[in-house]
Image (cartoon, rainbow, N blue to C red; front, side, top):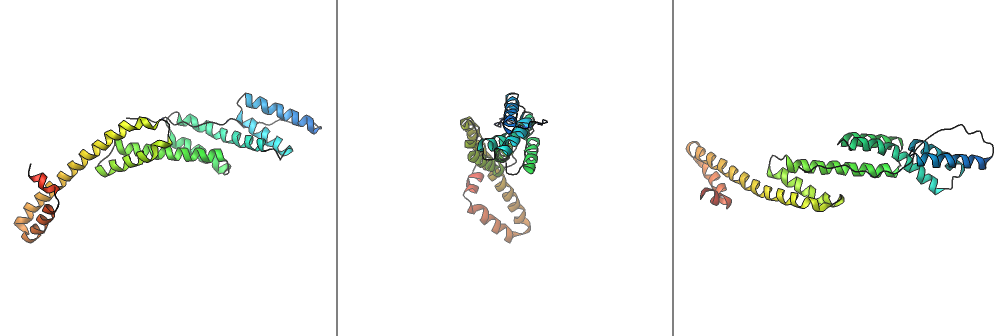
Length: 219
């Protein structure tokens, strides 16, 4: 069985708080910048997000600081979600990302991450349907979904043999289900022939109408 490893790209940054008593705005900028760089070097995303926000309040025209703050905020949730994804807990990881979007609905990184996790969940469902199927229709549905999605993930070539194997299985399963269905109809016909002759004639016509029935009963 093919196992999926959920991989999420992490953008780095986050928040921290300090008592700023400097009176000179330039000194304040230097202090905040120094603290921000220190937080980034330590991968303290929570502190970096707060410091970027404070600097942005002083320099509101800075696009860089806006982007940095957004990245650092997203990292708070993405890193936490990644811990659960590494354990195979897709639902738990998605729950954390949804929590982040509830608090920061316009965060583009969290929006993208959520789309990726939702799509990954759909891929896992398709794999389950091609592994634990009950009939040809379910297997066919899973195969179609896999074909549609595999190019969205790394190394789509690794799915080729798996899909080919499942396509062979669906052909065999479909033949088996067809044979079983006609055997069931033929048994019903024999019963109706004794109890309801007119209905038996209608059923016989339906059986003979499908060319598959000929090969079934000629064996």
